[in-house]
Amino acid sequence: MSQINKTSLALGMLLVLVALTVSGCGDKNSQSNFDAQSGAHPVGWVPTGHPLAAQANILSCTGCHGNDFTGGISKVACTLCHLGNQFAVHPLQWGQYAYALHGSFVVQNGTASCANVSCHGGNLEGATGPSCTSCHMGGPTSFHPLPWNADITLHGGFVGQNGTAACRNVVCHGANLEGVFLSGPSCNACHNFP
Ligand code: HEC
Ligand code: HEC
Ligand code: HEC
Ligand code: HEC
Image 1 (cartoon, rainbow, N blue to C red):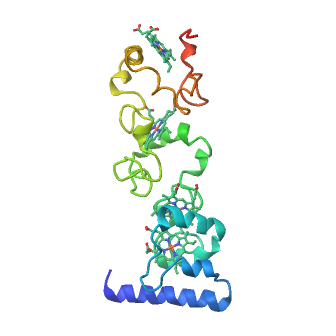
Image 2 (cartoon, rainbow, N blue to C red):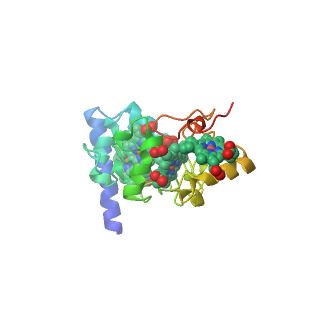
Image 3 (tube, rainbow, N blue to C red):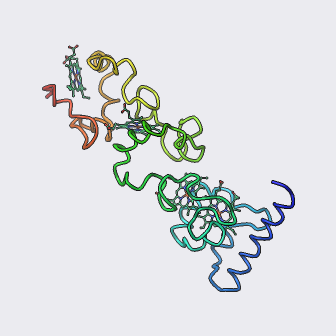
């Protein structure tokens, strides 16, 4: 960004701050949330600071990020990182079933929007969100080890060698291998384990 643009951006920010203060709708919070001098939010704003500030007073963001949160004079849209809206990092329709519904999203759209340094990490190694392979055994896009995709009966030998720790995930086959709604079946759908 050229020096002139930087200066006019900083001036714009200053004007917004002044306007908010004069109109009385700026609170101490929104001003300490942004340093007009450096033209940046404080350290730690992503990930920890901004969710709290937004939940406390979402209107304190609109002056710079726009009434519709598409960027405004800051040119940073909330949806640059959020897949839902200004309140939701994941698509709204996932609701409380992110564990079950993210798979088809990734199959359709790929992993580009997950691989955000603030979200699941630039290489999907985890950041504020977990690493994909904390659940997935076959790399980010395969929940089972890859060879199983051709022959699922290979799971028997794996369990014989490694036990069931990797299956006992609350969103995979359940902590007691009893199965999970919209996800992995109970082992006893096929077996007769005690
Ligand atoms: C005075 C103007 C101003 C206000 C008020 C403001 N922002 Fe910003 N925001 C900016 C600018 C400019 C940037 C780009 C520079 C930067 O990253 O700090 C930015 C960037 C951000 C980023 C991205 C930071 C990063 O590291 O990539 C987030 C998240 C954010 N703002 C959230 C919010 C939230 C939430 C609020 C309300 C609680 C808010 N902002 C209020 C001007 C503002
Ligand atoms: C640079 C990336 C980035 C931008 C831009 C951004 N956010 Fe966020 N936001 C995050 C991340 C990462 C989290 C998750 C933090 C966590 O889980 O600890 C988050 C979480 C939130 C949450 C909590 C949501 C939840 O489901 O718990 C709110 C509210 C929020 N952001 C508001 C905003 C608003 C308002 C803006 C735009 C003004 C914005 N964010 C822009 C990265 C961003
Ligand atoms: C908390 C555990 C967990 C994490 C973390 C996780 N997943 Fe998943 N993933 C699952 C489960 C459980 C399923 C299977 C849901 C079902 O049966 O439909 C799944 C399914 C998928 C599928 C569909 C696979 C197929 O063969 O149909 C893809 C693709 C996928 N996830 C990608 C990802 C990516 C990319 C990440 C990281 C950004 C990730 N997952 C993180 C638990 C997780
Ligand atoms: C859809 C049916 C099905 C489900 C669900 C299933 N298995 Fe299996 N499992 C099989 C079949 C079929 C075999 C036999 C493979 C062969 O003939 O080599 C097998 C074999 C095994 C074996 C080898 C010993 C044996 O009894 O033959 C173990 C251990 C095992 N499964 C554990 C599990 C665990 C743990 C789960 C749950 C996380 C599970 N299975 C879920 C069908 C299933």
